[in-house]
Length: 306
Image (cartoon, rainbow, N blue to C red; front, side, top):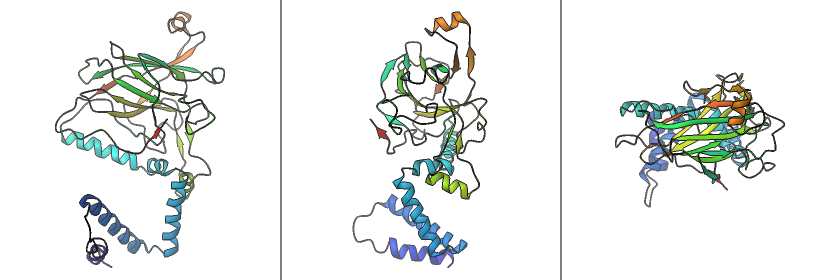
């Protein structure tokens, strides 16, 4: 079939058959995607067996709760970020900390504190380096933003996230820090490590067919928000990781690479109230003030909550 014939067929099946109230936006999206799928089936001569195997794959991925991981691995989340960057540019919005993907592992409800939080439960104290993350939240003119909400989450030394990994304590390595009067936040935690997709999972199975690995560099996720400013979804990836610029989820971006500095000076160790050498990362954040013409930065999606 040519595209005109395909469009006519899809219209006949999904528009002309409507007998009740229609959601125009959903209808528009479904009709377009179905027509594009029909076109791909025709162009690529996709067999019925291949089609049903594809549907079975999505069923399995959904049951394994890996569709969010798949969206990152196929570059869908990164593509949406690039579109958001372009929308900002067209609206004349510049500056601020770069956005990057959220990923599928955020959990709402992490404990809140002001200025400082210890994120880890102490179970890995003797197994991995302590990490201090500190920074300030400002606008893009450098004005401090007190009481900004900084939500932080990352994996443990085995590459697992609390809530999804039931062996970890509730909200281990997850905290919400409200910046202090000087716009500052400090998080005491453990060094995150890189990790890969579940090796027997549906996402890695597809990546294997594409000849791709499923590894991520060590990284820390952020949501940052404050009244009058656009919400920032971002993360930093840590310098020195072998997958820093080969992230299967395409999340590494210029301006989001952090260097972990070894702190061994005894006076500096004591200043932070610690009793051993640690690593330190400075990650300052710039928010962009909300503007009438600015696209929304709030993404509504299903997220875990505890």
